[in-house]
Image 1 (cartoon, rainbow, N blue to C red):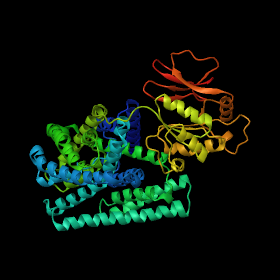
Image 2: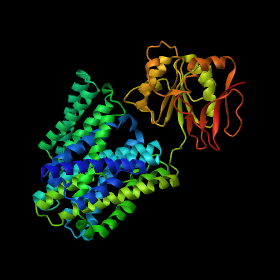
Image 3: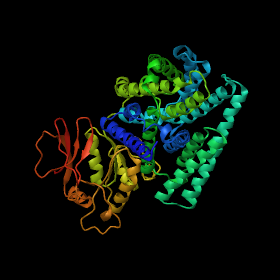
Image 4: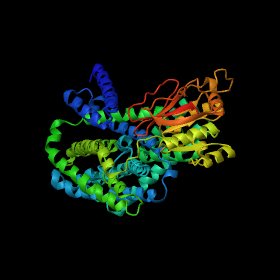
Length: 585
């Protein structure tokens, strides 16, 4: 290829990867639904984005390092403290039974369905055992199932990826060296244990290096992020050199260690890593799907649909039924776990690497591995993404759409506001620091958060599951300002604070950005003064005329979503809504 063609190919790949994800976000569908057809179409219409021409034999190594970064990022989101009791055993059974049953059934049916040798069918079977958080996560974000179900599926998808990649490497070596499937021998089991050992050692070295960079040297956000990237890439590359495909284990072990060792204090949201992971996913899917030709899909299309039906309607429900027995899940939750097993980036990456190597070695039927995997990925993503939300609603496992509020403060006016918000039917939790304020909240019959909740919430590495909005209303303006900044990374929703007085000389409050609750005219001290002078909070239907001199503070929508009036936004109530007012009694 000429320099111009290489530049055009690289630019087109980046544009397709980015544009597809932007379009997917606007359509509220998983990005794979757009990425795979975009790469496939571009590959069919032009030769400039084919990775074998852009990067040649280096593509496989780039895929391996890229997937390592993705899995490290996924590992950072796995807090072992949240994987306890029955959930831990459920995830373990899903991993064990999922890998075993999927591998055995796929390997058994594929030879007849695709006219391929058993050894190639075994390679296909081990590739299709993986799922992936990059696919499951976006689907669950739209569905919003119960926290227990979400946790099980995210953990399963993340941990299955490196296990599947290692098993794929073992099957590949068994086929490539002996020309038959001989994976049951003790020798192969020893090879698996050796691969795990190399990955674990690499993860320990990666953790030690990041401890040096982030704790001992105390690198800032920018240099610390660079240190993480360099460490993950270097450790995974060295592990792959020592033993093929062990770099993925090292990457996810490093991520798990960093997020679960409390002294690392990793932020819950990592904008650079999230951006990097999204870009890598887009580039990989566009590049991989561009290598698949229409001619390679036609012969395997109908058998792939049959295999897809077996995986979706037989294999996954069987795995979920056996794995969730005695797990403390409802019937609906168990059924939804059985209806969620999309394939993702690791399946595509391993299929690309292993099938190409087997084709080069002249193994019959190896050329069918990638197109079959591609069709299974497209089929599972389309099926699950389009059906997950209605299935979850039918099973009754969708979390309510309303807002769960954390109201911070214990002054009389704050407690009275909390009492009125709760009377409007909202899910309310309050927290206060002083004993007398906490007693005031308890006496009002409002759920009181645990004593260490706010410390947890302001820990950059923690998250408050289920809390969708925080309102900071203490009488300390600087505390409100600091907490509003720190809690942004700990809540799945906005954080608001009451404003300081215009002439405030506080240390932080006058200089901190963010949307101010109720605007600048109703700052904390003004609210307290008005309440002391007899003003009270009132909840009434939006259709009822407002009392004279009253001001709207919140709008409670018919679906129990709460929207506050802020300095930047005036909320207009609609039909069926209620309003929370501040009015003179």
